[in-house]
Length: 301
Image (cartoon, rainbow, N blue to C red; front, side):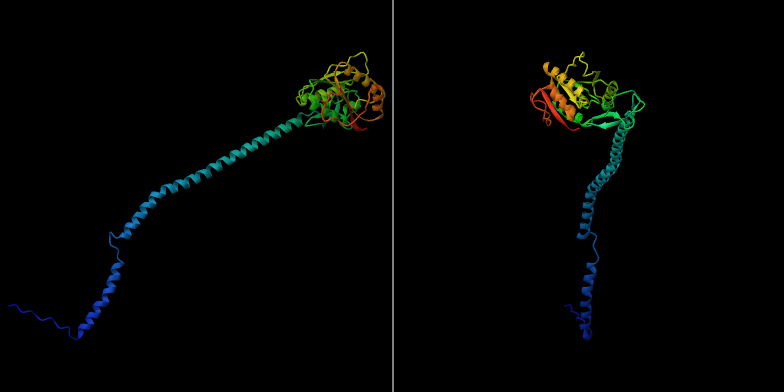
């Protein structure tokens, strides 16, 4: 029968050996925990994370590329917009410069100036001190008078089919009517003044006919027109009385008559000659109340 060998006796060193072994166990456990195995979950999670990042990377780059491209396109378009604005500004300045250059400086030997009238309309008038040395003319006919502005505003709103202006001078009412589509005829006994009218009409692309007509010449019939306009024509009592006769002529044939005159003694001569009730008053809102004859106050003389 085999004999069992007795276990070696640890003797007095047994407790110490046992303690050394126990002290080594935690260190080994800790050391092993710090050494990752090839297939540990940590590495698997890192690989998954890298895969996810790689899968998201194209979309992030694509979005960034779109933002970059938009920025580039905006920078490309900005100069185009700037150039377009510059082209428009250049065209506007060139047009204005051409218009200024196209303005006349002399008419029939008279130095002229542009005078603004009504709603971007303007007329040529003899420049101050520029009336010497030119063709003989009526100095009063080549200046713009306040009554002409009032008459121009009224006829522009009324817009009759045809209009004739008597003693037109620079013919601002005729220009306003023609611009509104009225067939306007500007008449005056001063031929040089009519050349001023034709020049202003041509330079503003407005079609206004002109004719020499002397209101005091009883042998010449009044030119036809649905509306007859007189604005500051009463330069003398004799002219005022002749104008009264022409107004009666126009009313007798069925035309409407608009007379705008400043408060001068010659206006009283007109009222006595026409012998009609009423006098000069404020401008009506419109020339459409069927009055037939409108006598409008042109202000102080």
